[in-house]
Image (cartoon, rainbow, N blue to C red; front, side, top):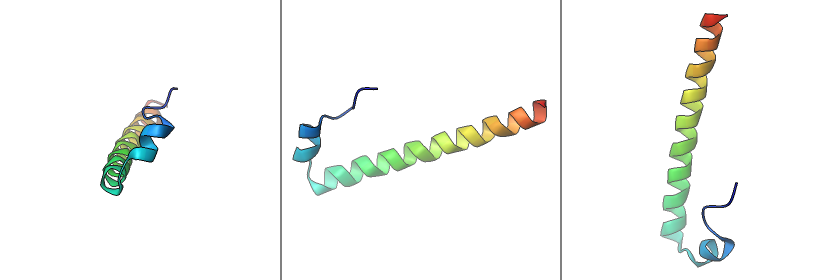
Length: 47
């Protein structure tokens, strides 16, 4: 998978941009974990 931001772009980001990006990434990860938990529950029910 190609990076969304290049290293150069990341180096030019200020602190607020980096914090915003981190927050978005954390929210995305949380949603992924919730989806995975739901899928695991469905699999257990089907087994």
